[in-house]
Image 1 (cartoon, rainbow, N blue to C red):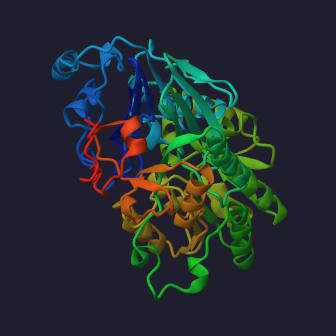
Image 2 (image 1 turned 180 degrees about the vertical axis):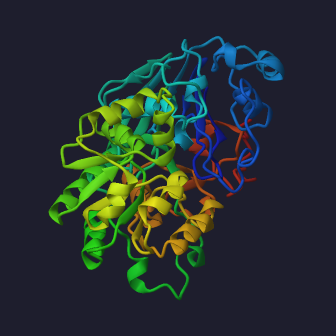
Length: 486
C-alpha cells in the first residue's frame, strides 16, 4: 500500500511537509514552516534556548515522525511524545524542493543518520541560511547530499527524481516519485514567467511521460479576484512582470531620478537577479552594493563568484561588532574578504547617484546615515516584508515616508499565475491533482482532472486517490462506497 500524507502546507503558503510511505519506506518532502508573520506565535515571544524543536513539536508546528530528529534536540516532553509513537522499521529520507525557509526551516534538526537530498545550489544555500542565523536549526554543518536531475534517490521501493523547475531561487526542483502503485509528481514552487520557463515545462512533460497518476501542485497565487487586483487598479499595474523585466525596471527608474540613492529590498538567493542588477547598474554608470549576507547567498546560489562590478556595504551592527573585535559568522567574513570594495554609509551618502544598495529591512535604521537629506528610491523586489499582510509592512512604509523615499514596485514573484498552474496540470497529464501551498486551493481548476483538496494530517491511499472522486473538503464522495483512506 502506498500512502500520501500532507502533514502541513494544505492551506498555508509554504510550510510544506509531505510524507509518501510504501512497504515501510518513508520519504519526507519538504521540511519547512509556513511564512506567516502575522500568525507567528514567536513574533513577540522569545524562543527558549535548547527547546526550539521541543516547543515546535508541542505546539504542533513540527511533524511527529519517528526517527526524523537528532535525539539531542528532543529534551523533556517532546522526547516522550516521539518515543510514544509506533516505531518505524523501514528507511527514512528527506528531499528538498528548494532552499526557501518555508521548505527547509527544520532541516538542521534532522538526525545525521537520516539522509537529506537536494540540488547542488540548495546544498550550498541551506548551510548559509543556518550559519547566518536565518533558519531555526543549529549551525549549517548538517550534511545534505546533492542529487543530479538524472540521478535517482532510492529509498526502499521508492525511486525519486529531482527535476529542475524555474523559481526565484537557484536550484529549484520538482519531484517524480516512482511507487509500486504509480508515479506521484510534486511541483515544488514554480513559475512560467521567469528566465527558464523551459525547465518548468520540461518537468510537466516528464510527469506526463512517466504516466504520473497524481500531481501535487502549489497554489500560492490562487486568490479571489478582488484580492488580486481591485477594480480601481490601473491596467498597467495588473500586468505580470517577468523576471527579465526586473533589472531594466530598476535601471529606468534610476535614470529618471539621476541624483537619488536607490535602496532595494531583494531576496539574494535569486543569484541570477543579483547578477542582472549588477549588469544593469554598470550599464547606467552605477554600482550594485550588497551587504555581506546578500553576497554570501548570491554566491551560494550561483556556485561561483559574481562576475560583474559590485561593492560590499557593512550595516551598522556589523561595523559595531567588528569594532568590538567580535568574531563574525564565517559566511560574512568570507563575503567581506571577497569584496572588491568596502563602502561605509558616509561614502554612499556622499555619492547617492552612484549606487544601488541592497539593504535588509532589519538594517533600516542605517537610512539615518545613508540618507541625511530627504529623497531616494525604495525598490520592492521580493525581499521581506513581502506584502501588506506582514506586520512589518507599515513600518517599512513609515521609514520610507520619514526619509522622503518613493516606493517603486519591481517585484516578479516566484509563483505561477492561476492560469499557468492550470496549463501545467493539463500538460502533466495527471488525472488527479492535489492542491497545496495555498490559502484558497478551492479556486484551482483543471478541466478533465479530478481535484482533491487534501485534509491536513489525513493519510490517503494512492490507489483510492486515483480511483475515487472527492469533495472539495478532502472527503470521498458518498457515491464511492469503498473508503480506503484513513
